[in-house]
Structure formats: C-alpha cells, structure tokens
Amino acid sequence: MSRIYAFNENDKRKLKYLYHQSCITNRYSVIPDYSLEPAGWSFYPPTENLEPFPSLESRMSVFNQEAVHLSAAAIHNCLKDTATLSEITHLITVTCTGLSAPGLDLQLMELLDLPKNIFRTSVNFMGCYAAIHALKLADALCGSDPAAKILIVCTELCTLHFQQQPTLDNITSSMLFGDGSAAVLVTGAKDKSKGYPLMGFYGEVMSKGKQDMSWKPSSTGFAMTLSAYVPSLIGEDFEELVNHALVKQGISPHQVTHWAIHPGGKKILEAIENSMELGKEQLEPSYRILRDYGNMSSPTILFVLKDILANLDPEENNRIFGAAFGPGLTMETFIVGSDT
Image (cartoon, rainbow, N blue to C red; front, side, top):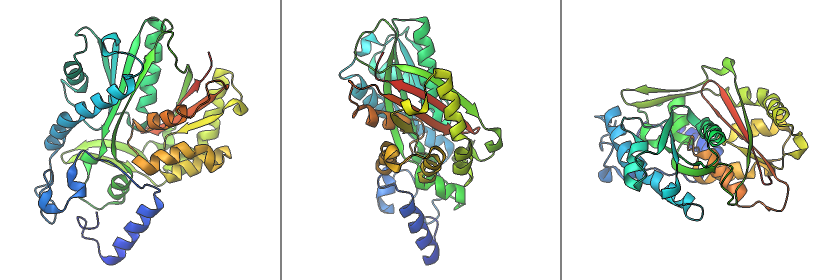
C-alpha cells in the first residue's frame, strides 16, 4: 500500500501504526501479486500508478476462475467425516465479492457432479452477516423437509477489489479484508448423525447506521464505505439485541457459555466487550480468527464457530451465541446448543 499510494515517510509511519493496531498477522489472497515484486505481477500492471487499472470485468473473470476451486476445497473439508456429495439435497452459495449468471452454484454443481435436480439458491451482496442468513434459510428448509441435507458454502475474494485512491475507506478495507471460504452442512430431523442443534435466530436493522457501511459496484471493482462510527453504533445497541434474541428463545444471559462474534475489526470486538461486560478471553476465538485470517466477510463467522465447536465438551450443556454485522446497518444472531 505504501508503494502504490506513493506515501511519504510520515504517511508510511501512520500506515504501519494502523496495521499494528489492527491485530491482524496473516491474510490470504487468490492474487499472488500482493506478495511479489512488480516484475512478477500477473493481475496488476507493474506501473507506478497501476495503470491501466484492472476493470470490474477482469476482477469478475478472476472470481469465476478461483472461487469455485476454493469453494470445492471448503466443501470437501466440511463433508469428509460427515456425508457424501451424493447425499446433498440442497445447495446454498453465499458471496458478495463476485457475481455472474450462470454463477458459483452452477459451477459447483458441474465440478462436484451434484445432481441436476438439486435445490439451489444463492445469497448475494449481504456482506458479513450473510452466513447467518443462509443458516436461517437452511433451517427453514429443514423444517419443510426433515430428510434435507443442505450444503452452505460462503466464499469471498475480498482482495479482488483493491482500490486505487488512498481514501480512508479504501485504506481501511484494504487493511482488514482477506479471501476465504467456509462450508457447513445443515440437516433435517431425520438425520441422526452427531451435530449441534440450531436453536434459533434473531436480527435487527439499525437504520441510523445505513450510511456508515456500504458495498457498491464500480467500474474498477466493488467499493466500500466503512465509517469509523460503526463500532460505536454496534456497541450502543448490541446488549439490547442480545436480550431480544435470548428472550425469543427463552434463554437467560447466564446460560450463554460461548460467544461467536464476527471479528469485523478489533474496535468492533472491543465495543462488544464493553457493551456486554465480557472479558477479552471470552472473545478469544474471534480475536484468533481476526489475527490469523483477517476479516473475510461472510465466511468469517463460520471460522469462529468452527474454532469454538472444535474445543467443546459434548458432555456439557453448551450454548453458543453468534452474531455478525453488515450493511443496513444489519445485526443478525443465532444460537447453537450442544444438547437436543
């Protein structure tokens, strides 16, 4: 970023400080250019100002080449000890970083040889909370079909959308976001294999934050608006959101044993700690995913959930409260239990 934005020494120091404060150590990208010297670039032209700057068409071309293989890897990882591809009855694809028709769902059907009559749908352009929306949709489908085996795959190639102008929004999004994919299997009541029950969902929209987070197509990729007010807006209303969600499910706050919070950034996690009077250790899975992967948009909450589930004692009565946030300003929650 310092090289491309031609920062002076003072701006370089500021950028290093921002990166240090982000709590992010590693991020990943399907574009190798970010780790290479200009002579090795294949996506960006090796010019001082990146001109001719990659168009939206070139970014979508990379998405169409890369997203399907990353998604397939996540799916195989998800199903290896759980189910076979031939058992899948529904496919839900989730993304906000690449769009086309035919799209990712049909690419996966072909690559994985899924049945031609499989039920499929896509959740597009909802941002970081979209995985929860997909879980909610899968839960509803299982209610109408107890034999359903629904595969959700969330794939985001956020780094495709690096922007040329060094605005605060562009610097912040380029500092936070990385690429990633996560898959999850949701099954109906007839499936007796070991799993974790989805106990319920609840969401609210804070209209006062409508202009503080947005994600819009442009001729040079998708452009983000990410106001510095977002953490405080979430912090103001999060406790009330949690209370509403718990009341809906008949659960008291002390019954929540784990918190799966989308790590949209360090300041968001700190705002939630303050709002709920949580210790930092209670959000350690979220901090860990932020440190190791950055914010990957929709897959991120599933990374956090996997981290928590991997360390659960199935003999204990666990309640996981999950939440993610996105444009709107939308806050979506879910509750997972380890008992039936």
